[in-house]
Amino acid sequence: MGDRLLFLTERFPPDIGGVAASAGRIARSLSGMAFEIDVLVWTRYLQPGEIQQGDRDAVAKGMRLFRLGRYRHWDMTMQRTLTLLNGMHAQHPSRAVWGHYLSPAGFLAVWFGLSANVPSVVSARGNDIDLGAFPPGDFARLQWTLQRATAIAAVSQDMADKIRAICDRRDVEITKNAVDGETFAPTLALSERQALRQQLGIAPDEVVLGFSGELREKKGQDYLFQALSVVRRERPACLLVIGDVRQTRGQRLATFAQSHPDDAARVVVTGHLPEAIAVAQHLQLCDYFLMPSLWDGLPNALLEAMACQLCCIVSDAGGIPEVLTSGKEGFMLPVARVHRFGDAVLECMQLTPDRRQQLGEAARLRVL
Image 1 (cartoon, rainbow, N blue to C red):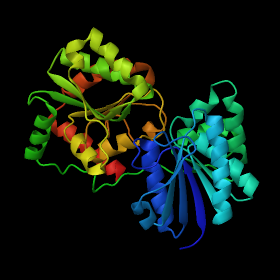
Image 2 (image 1 turned 180 degrees about the vertical axis):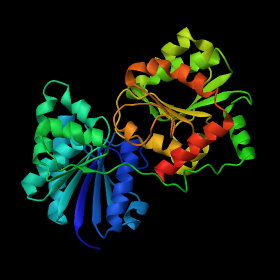
Image 3 (image 1 turned 30 degrees about the horizontal axis):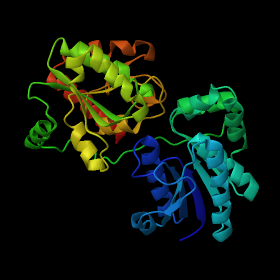
């Protein structure tokens, strides 16, 4: 093995979400390039300040994984993190530090890098620019991080443009997300699809509207519910959520159930699926994949759905237009018109099977 690298991230597999998936992918890639990787990730499942060294799989891949229990407030968590980073660096000196997501990981990576006199890389992933740009007081920290990082990686050109507007840096490296085209592929046999539909309680005549990931406000959850209601006025349908509902957003589903009880009864939530192959299998149940994001980076879930050759209907949020051209690999609505997703699905249902197949094949080819 070669040089040691500190890798700081808010989520890491088996945690859910795009940040965790991309953190795992990048850390494994760096390890494969002969870096020794010390991964530090925060968790709510340990006592505040408690440290747990990670699993044997990570060690086998040339990584040491440490999970740090979060305090109630980020200020204490960040101070504890810096103390831990200094201790790790003193024991096993690192040549660089990587902060995956701009805050708090990127901020702490730059802070530590300056104090330890090592280069820092920060990686802008999803809505981290927007989260830091608008709340009062956070913008100064965001700008400080971007100005002082040795190198910046962004997941889309859209995000690189935002970074340039904030700090006028033109050296941002665009590193798009990627998926495993062998795992995420249209390989499920018809009998297997029928069995899985039956297991989930999906009726044979129901149109399956799919969403993958953590259901929350930025992903346009209210517009997914609205689309389900619109489609169900014309055809039997269900909304298959491949993932989970963010705990703080569960009330929105409860509110929908109060006003549309019959439609809400057809929201099928799988819960977290830890294995990628299970996600791919559930995606292949979907007749249409919907992503009415209000803001986004370059969502892994969309790339996975495209790789599975699905007919995708998306918003034009963030970097999504960089991977999908409306009418070629799927269909795209402006963010200002996400309330029309249900109508868009009904229009897609008028397409011939050959045309939908053509869109799916083009989507998979684009991802590959």
